[in-house]
Amino acid sequence: MYKRIIISVILSILVIIVSLGIASYITVNDTISRSLKRRVELANTIARHADSVLENNFNRLYDISLSGGIDFKDKNWGPEKKALEIAYQYSIFSDGIFLLDRHGNMVLTYPPRLDHSVNLLSLPPVSRVIASGKPVVSDIYTVEPSRKKVIYAMVPLKDKDGEVVGIAGGEINPTNYMLNQVIRSVPSDENTFMEIVDSHGVIIASNNPNRVFTGSDHDRFLAHLIEKKESAVRRCHRCHVNEKTRNGQEERSTDVLAFSPLEMAPWGVSILQPEKDVFAPASELKKTFLFFSMVSVSVALLMAVGMSRSIVKPVHELIDATRSIASGDMSKSIGFGGVDEIGRLSSSFEVMRVKLADSLETLQQYNVELENRVSERTKEIILSRKKVENLLRKVITAQEEERKRVARGLHDETMQALSAMLMKIEMCRLYRETPSAEKIEEMRTIALKTLQDLRILIQNLRPSILDDIGLEAAIQWLLDKHLGEKGINCFLKILGEKGKRFNPYIEITLFRIIQEVIVNIARHAEAENVFVILHIGEKNVSVDIEDDGRGFDVPSALKQTEDGRGLGLLGMRERVNNLDGRLEICSSPGHGARITVHIPIYS
Image (tube, rainbow, N blue to C red; front, top):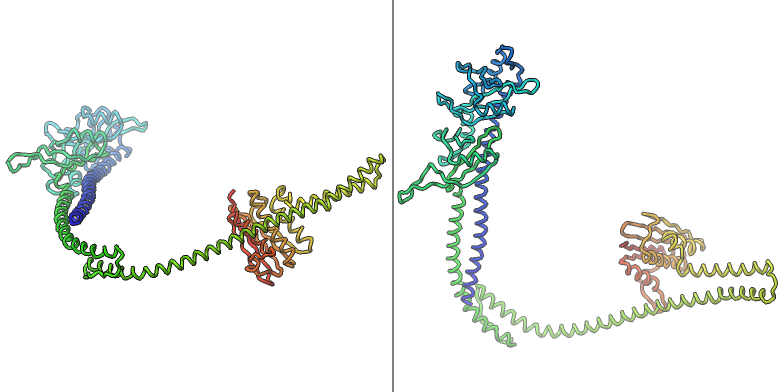
């Protein structure tokens, strides 16, 4: 047991450590992913800011095209100069704005320059604007012989027919305040480089002024992303910055590069940051988890040893004391106690021993009581079985009585009438005389009487009106036959979908229940008015039958007696139960009666 406790505690701690390790691994990876994602989002935000700056200044160039004063043929450059002056004010085109004709010749500049009569068609951005008719922002170009760095932003000038007739362009100094403000507006540490680079990897703007106009370490990779207009984040090596190890050797640092392209220009925003700075929170989390794991294992070992020494020995003593109880000796008490768990456990065992001894005698008493209860329940089951047998016998007797009544009716009336008719026919055959009109009328009367008796007999057995017309007409027929002929006012109201047919078994069950109630009202209720409400729903059908007769005591009526009283109500209840329905009987002597039947409709 000593070893098991130690192993159990260590395994429990290991399970917790593994669980925490998995959770920490997921958390670290999630932290890394979120750190990388945040840098891509930051690069994308800076790129959108730069796009906004370029778009605002592109609109100034478009204003030149839309001003309506651009005409290269009228030799009047006043409107053109005015349009250039307006576009130049507060714009990013600090090095000037110019107009080119379709052949790339510079026709006008603002501010005016002496060397404005040059041809820029050799520049790829110029030819691309003229060919495509779309605005273009160039990479950094070096203007000879001044070696000046410049960026061209150009939009096409179109005539009223949509043909490109020239170009409105502006020169952007890469050191322009607006571009550098886009980068410097975002706070960063000294090891993080935030830069705008062109498609050749040349740095246009940077939070480190010394890196402007230098080449990026990853120009091909960035050029591919700019061309595809894709954002990306990846680990890379900072090729131009080396760190010295303890041995004095130089080692390239590993960085995280996040990049997002611009929409308005073939540029992109890159954020280069040392990997150790990006993943610093994750590294700290790993160190914390490792320290916690080591401390947890050490504490687990100490706890396992202490628990084993404090638990195993008292448990063995308690086991020896309880073996006597297991052998059936309830007289020997457990002489342990204390305030710790083992002490409380031994005290509980002593209480259990005392209660167990007391329970043996109580259990014997319970066995006697249980046998008595079983005997009583057996007697009740036998009595219930006798009641069921009696009810079945009454049902069979009622069936036989009905058969006798049918047979008696056929014998006393139908067969006698048919015998009389047969005798008259036989007399006519023997005497070979033509029957007189009176004899024919007598035979006809006998035949009609026989037919009427058979019809009444058939209707009593199962009225054809139920099969032919439906339940509503059958209920009305019962009311007219059993109540209307006795002068009792009867009222039938149909709620819901009239004329709806149900399962034949449901219809005949409802008919027999209603027939039983109406016959009882006609025989016993002495009522003057009877109300029947048939409610037809989508999933159930219910019938309310109410009379103003003398009423009856419901509990007494539901008790079956030897003379057969109560059999009708029990039969009604059995019919309703067979259909999973509900029967409600409300009545008291002198206050009439109300019977409600609810039956679900399954099909």
